[in-house]
Amino acid sequence: MSVLSDLSAAVEKGKRKVVPGLVQQALDEGIDPNMVLNEGMIDAMGRVGEAFRKGEIFVPEMLIAAKAMQAGVATLKPALAQGGGSSRGKVILGTVAGDLHDIGKNLVGMMIESAGFEVIDLGVDVADEVFLDTYEKNPDTKIICLSALLTTTMPAMRSTVEKINAASWRGNVKVMVGGAPITQAFCDEIGADCYTPDAASAAEAAKKLAG
Ligand code: B1M
Image 1 (cartoon, rainbow, N blue to C red):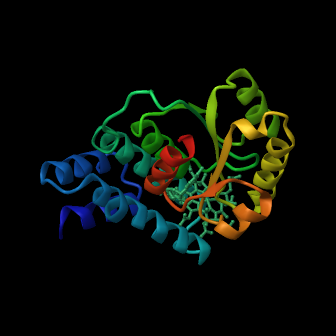
Image 2 (tube, rainbow, N blue to C red; image 1 turned 60 degrees about the vertical axis):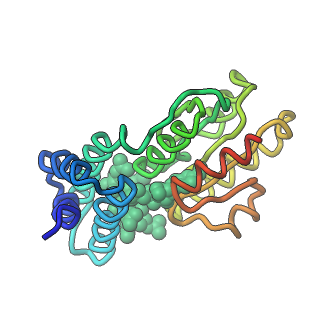
Image 3 (cartoon, rainbow, N blue to C red; image 1 turned 90 degrees about the horizontal axis):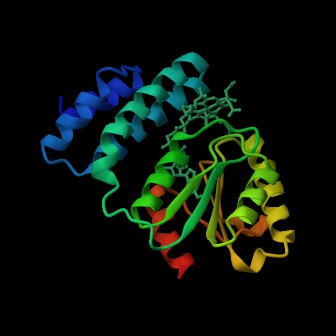
């Protein structure tokens, strides 16, 4: 078995102590960090989600796999996030109210940071007013980024965007949305400026949006 399939199996089984070593081994073998992320870890989380959906595993197993992936991402971060700095401006980032998923959001933050932005990460379960207050305290922010992983928290994303759209400063900031259930059609429907499907494209879009 290749190191990537070993890594993928270890993430799926939630082997938090083994995962960082396998990530390092993959990097030492010269495997592209994006391949380590996508084929070694994100694919595994897809299988975990599928097993949960079928009722083969439950929330604790999903959480253990998430922790293993987080440990792997921490090891991968220096290789993924090259060329930092904070010259492109500020980005506010958070997972919307009611939603506790943060692995994808953290990857988006990492990639945007490595594209040269200063990221203000508000964490998970972020209420509308926290996004708005944070912008008002940081009016030089270029983009507000919202993540949602649950169909049941899409209305919270809509609500946050509606409140941002009603703010007097709306013309000064862009709004980017993403997360597994989010689509371009939903982005258009709620009046956000940009939808991106993954962390790499979020960083590319951020550069364009910030001008
Ligand atoms: Co949750 N969960 N979960 N979960 N969980 C999903 C999302 C689910 C699809 C699993 C399934 O049923 N197949 C399902 C949602 C179904 C739906 O809504 N249609 C689900 C459910 C149901 C739940 C609970 C309700 C379960 C329960 O309690 N009964 C519960 C909800 C808790 C809550 O939030 N209130 C719950 C809880 C959890 C854990 C806490 C156990 C854990 C999260 C731990 C954590 O994040 N710290 C968890 C996990 C791990 C998952 C799965 C297995 C993996 C998510 C993940 O991290 N993926 C997930 C199944 C799956 O995704 N296949 C599932 C890897 C990550 C890199 O991908 O987050 O999609 P993702 O991010 C991508 C893109 O989406 C995009 O870029 C990222 C990187 O490329 N992206 C953006 C994300 N945000 C973006 C923002 C952008 C742009 C791109 O711009 C701003």
